[in-house]
Length: 247
Image (cartoon, rainbow, N blue to C red):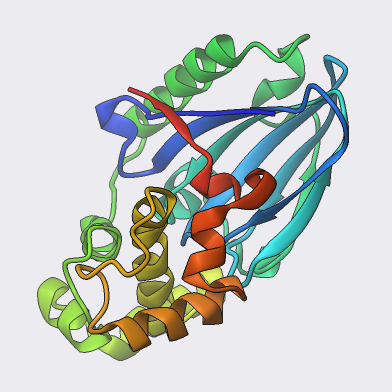
């Protein structure tokens, strides 16, 4: 199993967390995908041939997936502002699930083989042109997600005060677009921030939660397992803890 992540160019960092590639070279393997307050687009190649284009929603619970031998996934992990700007659609209907898109979506069917570098270059250029053609970008929403993703607010009230948008308005927008509350989104982001420390053997990160008990409770709520089991990551079960990053 090979899994790798590459960050986008600066102009796209408000919308794309990273591009990623997954290759299963040997036997069928099961992985668990953990909630991370993002959504994904995946191009599924089987033995080098494009078979499916898949759009996920946000996960509020872990999901088990089985990847067969010969699978290569070329994918993007999107931050939530991408739903408004790059997709111009809600993804609430995909909450905790996924759907297939046409193979021609974003001309992905033009990739005759799973070439990760070409995939990144082509889509980055496409997205940059898309952003240049926009008349206006709602900066308030960008500020909202910047605060959420970078742990600038520990509560919905603090979030509201930072961006001058009422808690009710924030929750109405998040529910309509993504099917999730601000409180849940903040909690998932705190868990996601801890995955890197857990992968490095630090069982109780002190910078993301009030105390050890609160940390364990919240991690179990969204991953259905303990920090210790996450840290062990037996057989690379948790992909988000088995990461090689390229800048």
